[in-house]
Length: 187
Image (cartoon, rainbow, N blue to C red):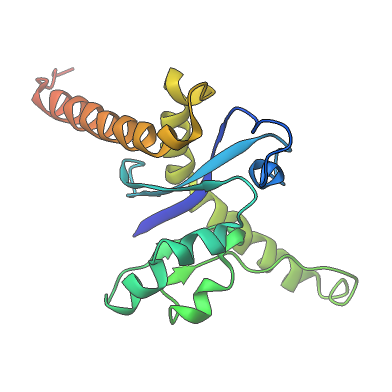
């Protein structure tokens, strides 16, 4: 199973005044000037893909479509991607390969069916609990000083993110092999 998210929002410098496209970088989620990267991790939170950096105002599903995720999944069999609610339309386009949480229940239509509401909330909770590795992968990326706030040109950010993702993958692989090499102490 693979996990995907585009919540890796990195604060960037605001475009100068009287320039076109100044409002493109304002993220609707956190109301800051940001760019976000599409991050794909494995079940242990190690980044498999980190790229497709777009302006903060682009929706998650649009970013995934532009990255070619739908075309990629059309050519693969047996791959499932666990995604958050921002990717809800991709499940129909990819024949169920993108798994999103059940939609949030609105209104008072099903209040009288408590068991159904409890089952629905349990399914949403289980889905969000299963997605913890991708959130950890994004957090590990953001721990790097260069991505805490990007002070240089916005055009350099995609290369910076990819370089840090490679370093992070190498660091996690080295840490894993060192952990395997440690002798087991008998109690």
